[in-house]
Image (cartoon, rainbow, N blue to C red; front, side):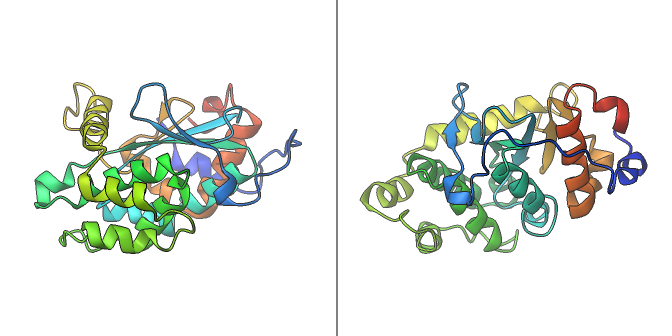
Length: 235
């Protein structure tokens, strides 16, 4: 199991490796695509030595904390520098728990943004403007309004996809993938946010490291330096 105390010791001790290729420069230039499984959204250099797989629900306030003030900004820097790739599995279970359809509509809109090559930027905008968890605030109108903050996203195809729930089947299969990730122990899903780094899941009891920006950055650097045996350093 991942030990936070051990991870904290890593601060300032990350190894630097020379980058073979220049950084992407901006979020808008990050490669993004739908994975072969049809549910995973993949962002970043496919040859990066670190792969972070995130399970998120757009209405989850803890995901918002990770995305805005936690480890996500550091993960973004690692992606831009070609040190990390991020994979997203988008859940929508909070609609059933809280009522409404905001999660499903947001996941559909994010899939539509991927089709336009604007997933990364739109994903950031949605979390920066997340409504209170108890409010079903991701309506069609609000999702389109927020899309207007992403240059080049609004258009006939995107707008129609949002209004018609074009990617309804993706929303359903993505939720199913999230639930499968919980295994027999958590058949309703592992909880959000959950993170796996190079196929090693961070245990829920140590999820706090996801919200310490400096610690998470040090962890990513350490794994980049030792992608094959990093578990021996931080477990």
